[in-house]
Image 1: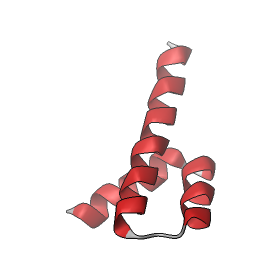
Image 2 (image 1 turned 60 degrees about the horizontal axis):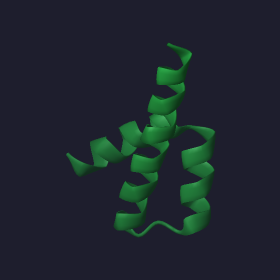
Image 3 (image 1 turned 180 degrees about the vertical axis):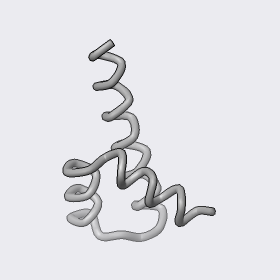
Image 4 (image 1 turned 90 degrees about the vertical axis):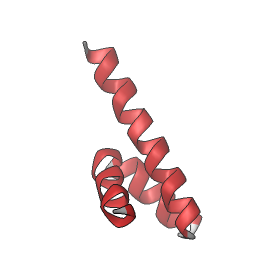
Length: 50
């Protein structure tokens, strides 16, 4: 179960980083947000898309 949570956290960080990159965010900002709060970053990016 813990491996699933780890994989989901990593996947959400990668997806959030991709969405921020497509939006034109600087790479430093992408790295900081995707590493410190991957799930929150993904939620913010999804809200921006909608």
